[in-house]
Structures are given as structure tokens and as C-alpha cells.
Length: 333
Image 1 (cartoon, helix red, strand yellow):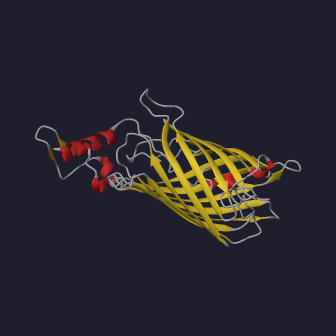
Image 2 (cartoon, helix red, strand yellow):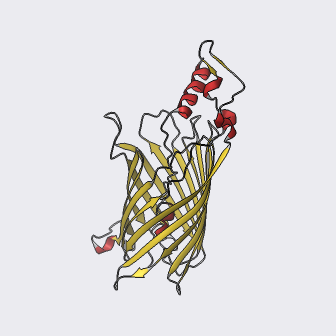
């Protein structure tokens, strides 16, 4: 009985008039800020490559896995950052899969002695599959005798995978210790309709991020901490359709070690019962020569159940060690 009702619910969700798609979000966005804003491409003014894996709600049937890989470099002559990245996002229950490859470009303009302006653009090609082999469509549901017909003539059945062009852009202002930027993804609002003749534009993803990094010794006596300890304060706001999130974090950065705590907030709740705090995220990072390793865990604070939280692992290889050796800041001295 429960299985039948699950099938019915899935069918009704697919046939509903409105649908929303939420972009993958990484807890370790500070290591790969170009996932939020293409203006961060080549921001360290060095060459680097990295891979990241994210497993969300690992104890639920609705497990979500996201893999991300990138390569970026910077040309001093052209004052430009250039990069490519690949995203693979999948959900275990329905078999939904989202693939996308992007090319990023950012140009650096020096405004005065301290301040820089970086406009950026990202152009990508995306592909989505909705795992129809695991879904039950409307004409298969027989509510009267609680059975599921094995055959469907629904036009959704013929649309196995869709493809689309995706365009995003961003702006960034920064000096050696402070940065603030904004970006809009899916500017062209590509059609992600399940139906061949349908038209469902992908909702634009808006983000605004800011951060400040400083030597603790410049303000107070570090006392029990190494004298060169640095602190970073960050805020990252994201909104896509009805979804919104604000990440507020702080980090302590030692020589080759970084410790961070981030609070994920729901600043514009959709109902009176919506919680303000949705998760508390913990991060530890290590750097050994050219290799950086980051591990994070999101402790869910909502009533979603025993989700098991969210784990994330990141590896970054920095080819040019002349860039500043702090682990997670995107500022180059």
C-alpha cells in the first residue's frame, strides 16, 4: 500500500503545472567560489585543478550525490582568468541525473592602487535525465483497485533526456583582504520541460557573496594561537525561485591548517513553521606542498528525520606555489 501511494505521489508531482529546479550548492564553496560566481575564475592568478564529491542525506532513500571537477589558469598579459568545469548531479530514488560542462572567463580591471573589478561570464551545455524507467506516469495509476499498469502512452515516456545551452554572468570587486560580488546563473532561462512540446524555463539563480580576511594579531593578542593566525569572515546569499539560503561562516587559518564553521540559514521562510537555522557545517582543511585537502560535514537541524547529514570531500592541486599559501581564501597577496 505504501509503495503504491509513493508511486501516485511521484506521478502527481510530475504532472503538476509548476515545477522548480534547485542548483547544487557546495558546503566548500569558498574553495571553489566559481561555482557561485564566474568572476572568481583564475582569482588566485595561478593555475589549479580540483575535484569535489558531495553526498547529501546519506541515511535516507532520497540520497543526492554531486561530483565537480575544474581546471583554471590566469594570463598576466591578458589580465584574464580562464577555466573549464564539469558537474554531475544525481538522485538515487527517481534516477534523476544532471550533467553540465562549462567554460569560464573573467577579466581583471585595476581601479586604483588597492581595488580591482572583475566581470565574468560562464557558458555551458547541460543535459538532464529524469529516470523514467523508475517513475510511474499518470495513465499507469489505477486508484480504484490500487494497481499500476506496466505500459504508458504518456508523451513524457518519449523524452528520455533533454539538452540545453546555459549562460551565467557575475561581477566582483576586491582588494587584498576584502571582496564582494554578485552573479546570476541561467540568464537565458533554458527550457527544461519534461514534455517534448512543453516550455518550462529554468529559474535564474541569484547569489551575492562577501568576505573579509585579516591577521588576528592586527586587532588583538592571539594569546594561545600562533602569531601568524588569520581569521576569515564570509557571507553568501543564494536565491532560486522559492528557495533561499544565507551562509554565514568564520574560519581560523593557520600555516597549513584551516578550521571553519558555517551556519546555513533560511532568511525568507515560506511558512510560519519553517526553521531559521537549517544546518551547522564543519570544515577541516590541510595543505601539503601543492596539494590541498578539505573535508566537511553538515549537521542538519531541521525535522527531515535521520538524514545522516551531508559529507563533502575536496582535493585541489595548485601548480603555482607563488600564489598565497592560505588554504581557503580567494585573495592573492
